[in-house]
Length: 122
Image 1 (cartoon, rainbow, N blue to C red):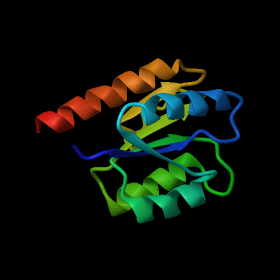
Image 2 (cartoon, one colour):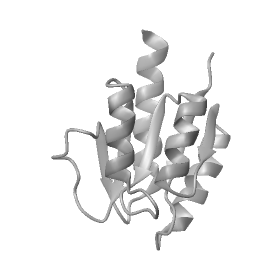
Image 3 (cartoon, rainbow, N blue to C red):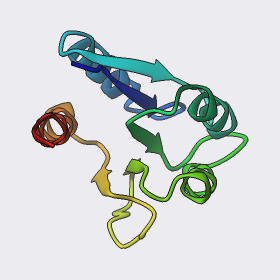
């Protein structure tokens, strides 16, 4: 079974413990977690690793999550991108899923497990 690459850009956020919790849980679930410190680094890592799912904060230094997501979608229109923000981002067509912070990490894990099951069945 192929491992999933997950970019998690929950940086410079009051709830940075979410990133650590998600990292801990995903490391034990056959997910490979790749972390970047800002949108520019995230875009660079995206180009290097071609992840299955990108999890991005919206407010990041250097390049925000919206700009990074636009550039990713220009390259790969089918890329799954999950947004984490203090505002509801569900109306943005860039994002396949959005979570409002502070969020229980279990919601992200549930969504990723659902995606993983769908992928295994296809």
